[in-house]
Amino acid sequence: MLTAVLTIAAISLLAGLGLSFATRRLPANDGDLVEQVNDLLPQTQCAQCGYAGCRPYAVAVVAGSAAINLCPPGGEDTLGRLADLLGRDRIPLAESVVPAVAVIDESLCIGCTHCRNACPVDAIVGAHQLMHTVIETECTGCELCVAPCPVDCISMRPLP
Image (cartoon, rainbow, N blue to C red; front, side, top):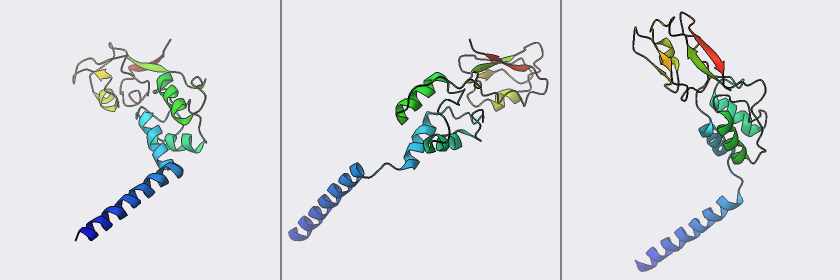
């Protein structure tokens, strides 16, 4: 009985050491890196980067077919974290990318809540049939609130 326990313990120890060695020697799985990049992105699914959402953009960044500076909702903070994770140089946001915030013309707002429901970061506050407003510090500039507005009272204002 003792021999069987010691044999199983020895096999487990050798297997553990083998797995530890393999983890250090084998290249990292690209899928893991894609997940790490995706986790850094703001998850607004706004498609301003030219991809259908954050995950496809993360795949393209890891594959090297997309630059890391195409995400306006992420801004400079996300760009810096991506550069650090991927070991790339820090570069400014692409010139075609203009960080902005949504602004609601409160005199035109009818309180329909369509914009509030579309906002992925809950930066729009207001009750049904009452005026809505944008919390500028929370707004990522994804523009997802603009299209659902039936009275076109939402515009985007570039950040200074």
